[in-house]
Length: 355
Image: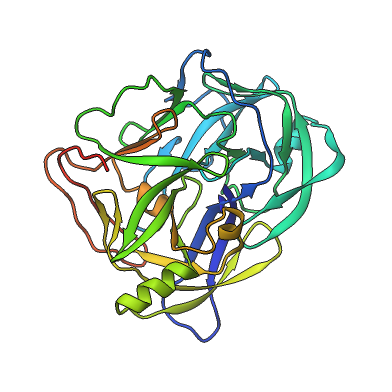
């Protein structure tokens, strides 16, 4: 779950059609102190000198394309050194980093040497190091323990910036201007042209909103670290009890831990998040460990990832106001497209609306 463990979803032998990569944030069982709201606002909108980037295109707010899900990054300093590019992950309750960064900065291991990390498919003991500070724009986190995650979980980034320490903040992601801002929330309402959905902060800062899949009410997690959208088996069962589904495919789900989960993929009925509609979105359903970690195993739940969020023009996660604010592409109309194996679009009302 990149909140946290990334997951690859692979088609099992003998099945056909849909396959893809699911990048879900790891739910890291760590805590960090909140950053002070008195710190000056900060934002990243241009490449910092020396910032690592081997891929063309947007450096900070990369939109979802036909063959890939979007991704959002900020530049951070660790112990006053950097810059490093971290994925902004609203589904992770802690930050994490790569072995390369830990080695480059000679970060000391924690006393026990390891911490327990909860991923999408299971839990594992992973190496951990001590950091004195992490700074991203105007946010500076205090000393703490960060897990070191190997493999492809970071998709070329240097780490994950989780939600611990940014409560009271506002994350503004602008895909048109390739800009990500993390600033103290002013408490002001969303500008004209945005759709606003009220949220609650769940299990250490996850942004939870009310939604519906077809006629089934569901709890929805807004997860900027998840590459693809996933649902639990309770949601799948409720959908199948009320409507026909499109063809379903078996999958294996691989996370940051060695455990492998079983999943099923099919195009879900129309998904509602407040007034926003997602049409024919392929969703991976499974009895996945992450839903147990988040306390969402016994009721219909959905994790909306960057395959959807990256198709907006702009969105804001405002922790102080407890709101998710979104703006669709196009200034006057409402774009509606059907999902394919690699794409999906949304329908968002032209007029502001608050759930």
